[in-house]
Length: 394
Image (cartoon, rainbow, N blue to C red; front, side):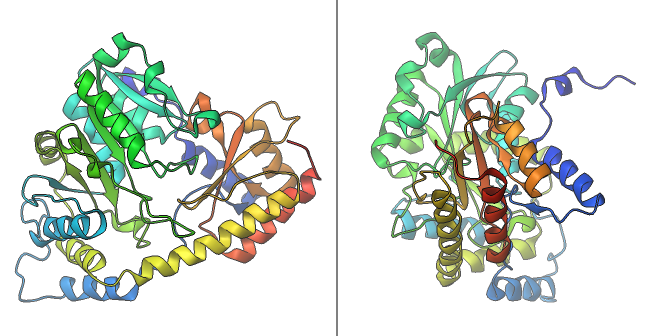
């Protein structure tokens, strides 16, 4: 049996490879601390769980266990629109400018199917979430990688994109607050992105799942706050990260109505929507008290301080990130590349970190630590790293 040639273009999925390495080390009896995957370790807040249970047991709703796509909960897009108005001052039409997703990854993977034909180009940030590129390849397109460099505050240089490439491009992916670099963007940057999209007639797809995971008083803006953005952009957001709901699989895309209609057509033919009870629970998350988000951010901020302060005491010179629940750091001198550093930390410290090269060539020279682990394990992990390395100069 011959598999589809498109699969030969796909690099190994980063987190699957990490998982295999962890399993092997643990099978050898090692006490491995994994700081690799950004999956919140705290429980979903009780009021959201209570609403899920209520909705699942609601005998007055004869449709509670039927396809969520065929019988969607109309109040969910209304709640998204209400949240966007309250949070960003952005007005959305729930009927045409909000689309329910089975998690952000679902939307990211399917967007290229709606817009990319074989040979078309997507502008993809690098380092970046691997699915931006993989989704493009699955659709038969080509990725033009926009390097996110430290000297540019990990933002793409639109002027460096060749005009013929920009004119050929159908999509441009952005992600702020950024995974993996933790960089943030202001409205001026988003204005430049919108102007670039208008000039080259392309669709901006802004992946914004970390918009609510912010620290030190920082509040992340929405790209849709920029005048004209809804004519050239969609924004994908998720309940996974702020409400500890990664396994629940519910998210949404908002913005340009025609783009969402195209994405919706793809999804109508590929999935059957989100369980109605989960949609009701998501409504409760968006419309209820946001103290649970603030409380979780206080936890992440303590963990961030712990990790950054410990690394800085041992030779790094890191600034504390304003958003996300990651720390993005340069590998120590003397290592050939980020994979060698990550492998050495697993072998010598029994600690898993994510090599920056896993997010693309422009991620080389860095590694990522996730803060979604208990503080005692984080403390032990960074102390093990420090002990394995000794002090170094960067």
